[in-house]
Amino acid sequence: MKTLLSILCSKKVKNSLILLFLLFLYVSISAFSYVNAVSKDLEESVFRLHVIANSDSEEDQALKYKVRDALIEYMNTLCRDVSNKEEAIELARLHLAEFQDIAEKTIHENGFSYPVAIEIGNFSFPTKDYGDISFPAGYYDALRVKIGEACGQNWWCVMFPPLCFVNVTSGIVPEESKEQIKQELNEEEYSLVTKEESSEIKFKFGLIEWFMNNDLLTAKK
Image (cartoon, rainbow, N blue to C red; front, side):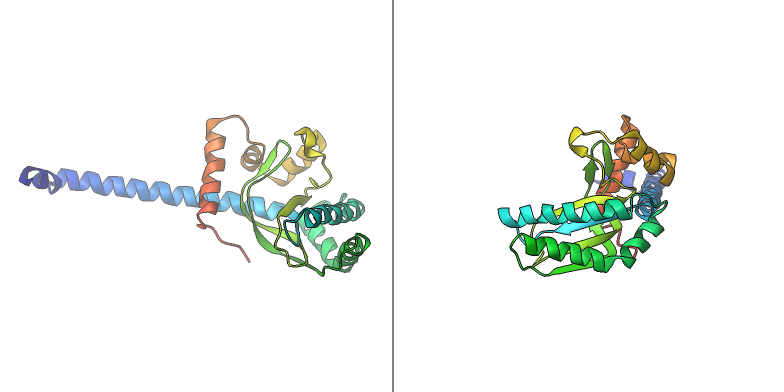
């Protein structure tokens, strides 16, 4: 025991431990800075749609998808040709009453009387795949639609770039949509969301996930 203590107390070992601690601190700060920068850039490039069902009952979940379909049909005429996220948000803000009317009409036509609350804000989202595009967990600006008590499962898509209009059942996002995403993101961010087959990209994507899932990054608003 004395020998071990003498070794630990030696100047050389102390210096080594200090260096290891400083290295750990540097790596941690670098990782946090990277994740914070990439997350912020991704969040500033994307505007999402978030529909929350009244409950998880079969009827309420089916109603959620009908409301979603009606809103997307309207969005298809409203937002498909927007050139940037700010324009998409402004259009959505100017037409909140129309989104409200469409959601309420769809609910009533299907025999329900749930109230609808619609707002634009900055909300927490889990990782979401859209075909072969994946957005990591984070805080994104979104148009949120809450049906009734809003206690049911959620549904998400991306209003800008317009991935709501992509049929992701095939698992492939059209090149035209990918090109628009690429224009909004830098090369590093585009590699992340397309999950390029490299261990480095997968590690970085996982790093973002870890920081977000452990609440080490918070909403920007």
